[in-house]
Length: 99
Image 1 (cartoon, helix red, strand yellow):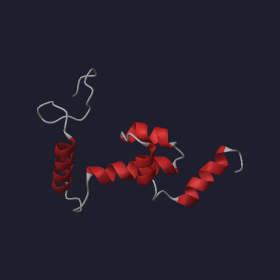
Image 2 (cartoon, rainbow, N blue to C red; image 1 turned 90 degrees about the vertical axis):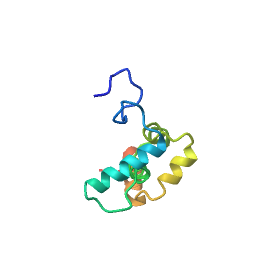
Image 3 (cartoon, rainbow, N blue to C red; image 1 turned 120 degrees about the vertical axis):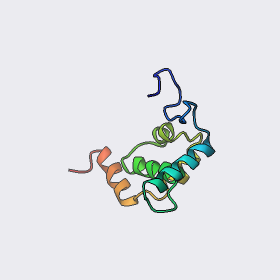
């Protein structure tokens, strides 16, 4: 268990924060151990959560807070594949246009 004071909530077996590279390696090897299909990555997980947050109506600033992106342009690139129809429905509902 990671102490509450610890800034990193995912740590190595030695209790140290993962580097970006070591996290990716750990994720791929864990997926392989679990028998999941090849090609899964932490990057893909980050992109998927960004898309899902966009489809749920989150702002780019909210998405960046979750994904750790530093610019809104990066968030927009990650969320391009979001379901446009669903996004339109969320947008219209937010102004009271959906019953």
